Amino acid sequence: MEDIQEFIDWFLKACESNTFRRDDIADDGSFAAYRVAKVALSAATILQQKELQTRNISVNSMHPGLVRTDMSRHIGFLSADEAAVTPLHLVLDVPDSLKGAYVWFDGKLIDWYNYNSDCYFKRSSYLQLLAEAGL
Image (cartoon, rainbow, N blue to C red; front, side):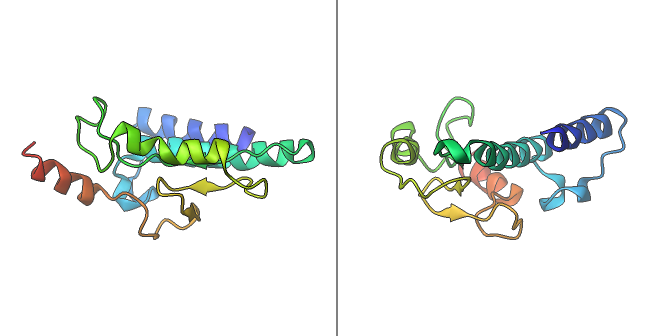
């Protein structure tokens, strides 16, 4: 967990001192704070799973998808009800063997190390959504 905190501190200090380089983060640093938070969460998920392995407790994280809420300015692919399906599945129906995984909103398991994966939400995709919504 100390390494995760170091990573977060590095990002915050770089932002505060205006030394953050956008090319240090995937997709030219778009949504950098969000991405740093998600990397920290994913890493913490894996560490917690390792710590709890002997107690037969499963720890997983998931990406809910872009949900139409006030926070997203009602722009998104999923309603709140649709977005609830995967978390409920993870809590109620997932096999005990699923541990330390990163699960996409559609239930697909994601290799979060692979920043070139087509699952990553790109800034250009978000800008296109905004344009289509007339914002």
